[in-house]
Structure formats: structure tokens, C-alpha cells
Image (tube, rainbow over all chains, first blue to last red; front, side):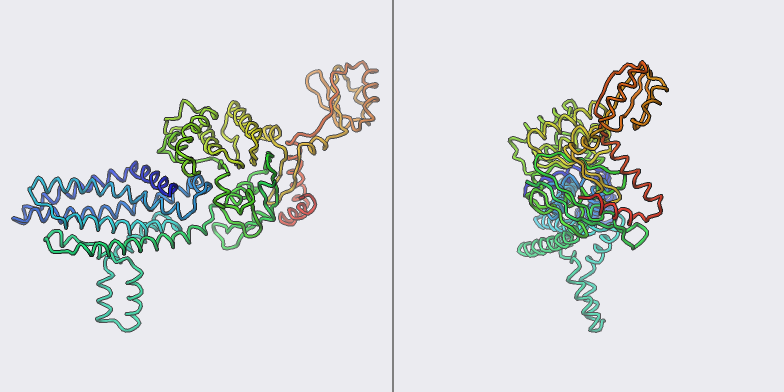
Length: 255
Length: 330
């Protein structure tokens, strides 16, 4: 446990010193600003637009930052042999991966926190009441980022940063559409197609469950009890993906 | 107690452009007892770093067995008692030396209380006290090597494995490392290190192991190194003309001159009296008579040149290496 937290803290330190973090925050600010520019177009819906664009920006930039940082960090450590310093100590490869996962997640959570603070400030300046569902949506966005983070760590254990980014983006897109794909297959596909889509549906991350933006923007009811289920889903998914990553990583030779 | 045991380890790698595997270690075996210092010697590409990585569990062997401190390679409890310095070390550049050593200490399971004191101690030992707060990013190669040594000895390991510890160090740095290793040996640490700097290796090691093309071609103890030259005596004389040398030609193995001094290596102990008598009769002044034994460098070079001759004789690399292994490895 101590080694996991040390690796996570070190990864966090390394990540927040990446220029990418500043770029992410800059684009975040730009997106928030754009919501102000767009808001006069929808009379009386300024708060909704700020909230909608704000939540989408947090999710999008959170995921992109995770992919960009996560895909290079592990590869860099292996390439420059800094990993030898860790793996030649009483630290298992699973602990190393878990530490990396938490470190990246912590760093991206920092970006999310800054962007959330800006968004909340803008909403407060616009005298918009902050409802609990907004914070639930932000919490689910963090869980979504955690799932993406585990996927990035998984790919980075055996492939290059470019391919890790590519595969991760593909999985994020597929994961956002997996529900629609299942419905489509059930309506129009044959038995074989349905089975294949079913298998894919359970293998791919169902990222739709983390999207509460619609409810947050339009103040629709959401059962707080569902948060536990989604949290459990994210925890199990991350755990399984990191464990599979470990099975690959423990066979890896550092030649 | 055997601290490190490598038994018949074989390892092959796939080439970047081909699927065929190329064997780089052909059954490497070596043993290291508690409190010993062993030098691991070999030309570039001989398999030194690969052997070390297998010892540490960074690479898995195709066959054979490695046991460190009576545990399998990479075992958690064994690794807590091992210190390692990689070749050309790279550390986290965003950390200061203090932070980096703190991170290493935590990884090694050190308690918070004693750790800060120990960090200060090792930073002073490696001569980086003025740079402890500086980011590693700004370190020179020599400073990185010192930092690497500091992290390797931080947790007071029982076994120290060092890959080229003298690389990138200035003469002062080399002396510092040499003294540090001798001090660690005095405290009972077992040390295994690879190096190209043969005089340092000769000063430090109880035993040396020479590897060539993935085969251990020679194990050499310090006493054995001295015994290798037994019977050979070097006479240093001044004012020794060609006629004098010619008169003792049949008794000497070689002659070399530096300034007005002539060095003659006598073939056998029993020829010494005759050689001295003849030189004296020719008006030469005898300055020194010393027993000569080959340096590690000479042994190493003779092993390497022996290999080249074998290659020149037309034998394939692999066949030649294996045949030498059969003859010389023990």
C-alpha cells in the first residue's frame, strides 16, 4: 500500500509538471469563454448553456488529458529505464501499475477540480442556483475518466504511445456508442450479430452510464442510489482492466 | 553462505527485423559468497547487462535458475535486501535529490523516521551534499552516477549489484566509489559489479569473472592471479647495453627499455642468479628485482585475443565459444 501511494504521488508530481496540463487548462478556459459567447443566442437559457458546455468541456478535456498523459508516462519510464529504480525494489508489477493509474487519475482530477471551480464561479456570478445533480454529474465524469485511465494504462503496457492513444480513443468512442449498437443489433441483426454485439457490449466500457449532463442541465430527477451502482461498475471495470494489464506486464522483459 | 547463484542461464532475443531468436547467454553460471566482491568483466555486447537484469528479475531467462539470497530472482523479500545501480542511470528529472532518495527509501520499505537521517548520510558519502535540493534534471553524468550509488546503498543492502559503477566519474569520483565499496565490504556487504576499468577492479575484487559472447570463459581469484605469474621475475637494470642483453638472451622472456632503465623478465627462478651475474660482469647496475604477476588487464586481453585467434582460425562464433566454455568454465 505504501509503495502504491509513493508511486502514485510521484506520478502525480511528474504529470502536473507536464506542459500538457497548462494546455488542457487553457483550452478549458477557452471552452468556458465560448459558452458566454454562445449564450446570447438562446435567450433566457444562458445558465443552461454555461452548464452544458462546462460539463462537456470537463468530460472531454479530462478524457483527452488522461489519454495524452497516460499514453506517454509509462512508455517514457520504460524507454529511459527509470522503471528499473522501482522494479528492482520490493514492489510488484501490479503495485506499480496501480500506482501509475492512481497518479494519472489524481493529476487529471486536479485539472477537473480547477475547471469545476471556474465553472462554479461562472454559474455563481450568473446567480444560477447550483443543484446537487450538477455535482453528481461531475462525480460521474470523474468515474468515466477513471475507466478511460485504466484503458490507457492497459494499452501502454504493451504498445507505443501513438497506438495507445489511438486504441484508447477508439474504445472511448465505441464505449459511448455501445448501448446504441446493442439496440440496433437487437432490432435489425441476426442471431450471430446479436451474440457478437452482446459480447462486445459487455466487454466495452459502457460510458453512457457516466453521462448525467442532460439531467444536470435540465434539472431532471436522478436517483442518488444509482450512483452506487455506477461507482461499483467503474471500480469493477477498472480493477479487471488493470489486472489484465498486469498479466501482460508481468511477462514483459526489460531488455 | 551463497548470496548469489546463477545456474546454466540461457537467454535469447528476437532481432528487430527478424523473427529468428539469437542466443546471447549460453548457459552462464556463477556463484558469489557472502562478503565477497566479484568483478564481472567482458567486452561490449558480451552479455554482462543481460545477466545482471536476469539476476534482478527484469528479464526472464529461457532456461536455468537464478537465486538471490536463497530466493528466486525478483522475489520481494530478496529485493528488499538488494541495491542496484543500472548502467547510465536515468532518474526522475522533476525530483530533487532529496525527494528522489525519499521515493527510493519508501519503495524499499524504509521507515520515515530513520530515512531522513540515512538520506543525509548517503548524500554526504557520495559527495553531493551541496546539490541535495537541486533538481536531478540539472545533474551532470558524474553527479547522476553518484546519485545512483546513493540510492543503491540507501537501504543498507546485503547484496549490491552495480552495472559499470565507475562510468562517467572523474578520478576523484572513482576513488570515492572505490573507498565506499571497500567500506561496504568491511561491513559485510556482498558486491557484484561489472566494469571496464580494470585497475579499479583489480584493487577491489576478491574474484573476477570474465564473460565473452555469452559464455563465462574464466573465473579468477586474486590469489590465482598472483599464482599465474609465479616463477617470473623482473630485473630492472641501469647501463645495460645490447651486449649484456645478448649474453642473457637464453634466460629471459622479454626485454623493454624506459629511459636508461632496462626491464628483463627472467624465464625461471633458477636463472636469476646467472642473469644477475652476467649483467654485473657487463657493468650494469641492478636496481630492482621483483616477482612479476600479470595484471587483470593482461589476463583479460589474453582471453580476448585468444578469442580473436580462434575466430581467425575459421571456427564459427558459437562453436568456438562453446568449446572454450567446455575447457575453461568452472
